[in-house]
Length: 181
Image (cartoon, rainbow, N blue to C red):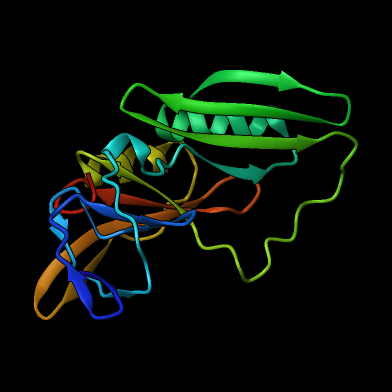
């Protein structure tokens, strides 16, 4: 619902509201959450192509060859594009299963490992057979952590394990299913 003073408008699934340069998504895909918005005057409907789409996540790495090799062997990611600049190189990694890419940034001349700090969480990938992937990644010497089952109110939400790339970034490997496709 959107309101302008005492006037109320009901917006249906997939509609959004555009008021003076501000967009508010009311519902998208198969989920609908009514919202109350006060003080706006104009409506427009956005299509799915108007919404933001995740395309890549960037991480800084120290050794390009070692990182490209790791992501290829562990997840089948191939170099989609490599852009070499004077002071840095960008390497975009992807596979045919997803349009999402991992962007590796190599800052030339850097010799010290990056301090990941306490703000970084993890990347996540999903696989069809978690147990087989755990065994395969372990055989490659990448030291996967133990498989964990994550439950909420007695319902399994996820099965997963973590590994770290050569620069210490954590990667969650999830059994495909539910919200983790």
